[in-house]
Length: 189
Image (cartoon, rainbow, N blue to C red; front, side, top):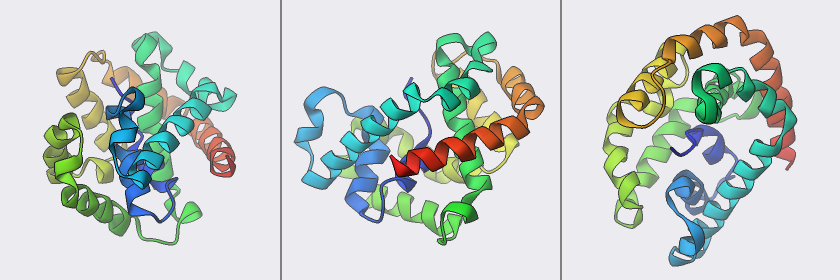
């Protein structure tokens, strides 16, 4: 299962649409396949990998992720990634002047315009992502709970969404503080 923190990845791509697109598809491009894409999409894919590496090694992120270990074991990072996108959306005005709905709509538009060159896996889920507004649904706990449930049906992610939401609610203030401290460091990186 690939990580699901699309909003953070795209946000961290700056204002270059091809870099955004590469960062968006980064989990679906393996090995040296980034070389098969136009230059700036390839740069976005490599940026995606650098962000993942920084995140996976970061002690603050690990604290957040470890709270999900009992229910998700090796998949705990996926839950933390989605939660961090939720927290980015909740704090959006702290990090961006662009309205979040316009940001999300723009991602959908550049993805559709480049559909033929997207990896097959992305081509398959993109229509569902757009029609169900996955990125926008990360704004609410109900929305991320729905994402957890859909992923449990379609992937090897354990069906533990009740556990995940309970942990999120119990530790929300801690997650909030951890995210903002971590994300500030990630932006600097």
